[in-house]
Amino acid sequence: MTTAPTVWSLLRESRGFRLLWAGTVVSFLGDWLTTVAVLTLIEEFSSASIWVSLSLVAKTLPIFLIVPVAGPLADRLDRRQILIVTDLLRVALVQGMIIAYWLGSLPWVLILLTLRSFVGGCFIPARSAAIPDLVQSDRYLPAAMSLMGATWSVMLALGAALGGLITAGLGVTGALVVDALTFLVSAAILWGLPELPPDEHGASHDTRFRAGLAYLKGRPYLTAVLLLKPSLFVTGAMLVLLPVFANGSYFPGWSGPLWLGALYTARGLGPALGSLGLRRWIGDSTRTLQRAILGGYLLIAISDVAMAFSPTFPLAAVTVFTAMIGSGIIWPFAGTLGQLATERQVRGRLFALEFGITMLSSSACFVIVGALLDAGVTPRTMMLAIAGITLLPMLGWAAVLRVTG
Image (cartoon, rainbow, N blue to C red; front, side, top):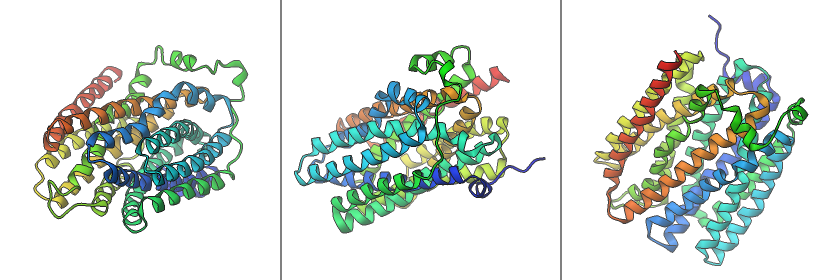
């Protein structure tokens, strides 16, 4: 039996992927640091949950709206250039957010956050489409996708923890300044990437967005794989609920940015264990990855029920952690299956579509959950509903595996 490549061998042997990963680490740090800062900023200006929902929509919905542009760009232009330019644009937009905060304008903060998300929506598919080119061999793809998934979660944990500390110590402005610097450092790192031009046969391919959609015709398995990440939209409800659980109303004595950061830390560490820890145990075979995804859904549902009945803040944090282990199984494993089932010339469009639908469904979830909370629905009731909804995609994926054998 061939030993699955480790992430260490991947990083050691692939300089290009090592640079892409390093740039991702830095930019993720700023992203999650800012999440805590923006939520704290909103708390200064308003107590309505709908503003929290709108801030999350500002971070997600633009990524869906930019899909018809971002996907073709990633298949038509040098992906290295896209990564660098989008990082630099986000430096400028974060500086604008700082000015808007100084002026006391919450709407303008959210407008600039929205523009930043549009730009990020071009960065994401270019990064995803570049991974197979930089790892150079399909046998390294599972390690690459697991590492990227774990990086997202670990940097969420570190960024949230730092966000709590920096926002508590230096205020919202300090957190946003650090965020701007992370994008600048990321651009400097990604400058060292090799050129990543379009497919060498690109002239013979239709790079329009609708041609990417046509690629899915007659490929039901690939379509199902690309819907796995969007099916995790209900886990996004936790982003609206966490500030409520950390405001002291449910767990007296556990309130403020430090404890909000602690919940985000728990949310971030879980996927790292799910993506890297489980892969090391079960291996990289396609069939194993497919079946593990079923277990990921079940773990999320069980954890959400447990959180609904958690009597203490520490126990609630533990259930957040275990739920995100399940998410950490589904996200990178689905990414690996998608990379293996997709050809190079359409990766930008299909991965833009995948992430865009994920953000659209998450945005809808944010708005609905925020409105329900303001209408008087309790967070515990919301967690029970989320647990039930999570079982639906699990059953759908089980049906797909049964049909495809």
